[in-house]
Length: 168
Image: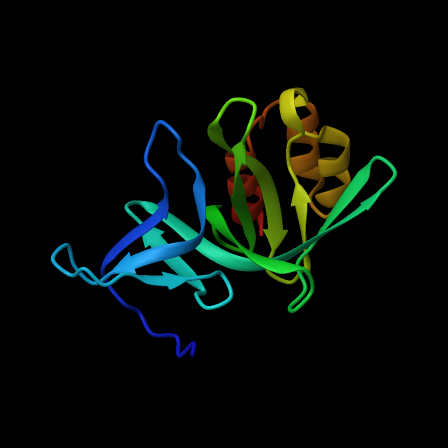
C-alpha cells in the first residue's frame, strides 16, 4: 500500500559487473545486517534513490507508427518503469535505462517531459544525436531556445532543459 512513506536502507537495482543487468524490481534491505530483502516494482514505489542517483516511476506505452514512436505516459496505460531523473522542474529530463545486448552495457534513451503533459519526447536518436527539427517544434513556445539549438549554442539535453526551465 502506497502511503507516501519514506523508508531508508540499502537499494539494489542492478546486478554487479561483468554481467550487469537491470532488475525489474528494486531490492531493499533496512540495513547491512538484515538478511530479509523486500522487492518493490515500479507500480508500488513512486521513487527511490541509489547513491546520488534518483529514480521515479512513470507509466509508459510506446505507440509505434511508420518511422515514428510516441511515448505515452497515461496512468494505467502500458506499464510502469523506473526512470533516472537528470533534471527535474517544469521540464524534466530523464534517462530510461535498458540493457544493450550487443555491447552488454547499460545504456539509456534521453527523454523530456513537461509537468502538464501525458507523454515523453525523445531527445536524441542514437548516433545521430539531438533531434533538432523535432525539438524546434516541441519548444515552439520559446523561440530563443529554438534559435540556440539550431545555432548549436545548446548541444546537450541538460543545457536545453536548464535553459528552458530558467526561461519560464
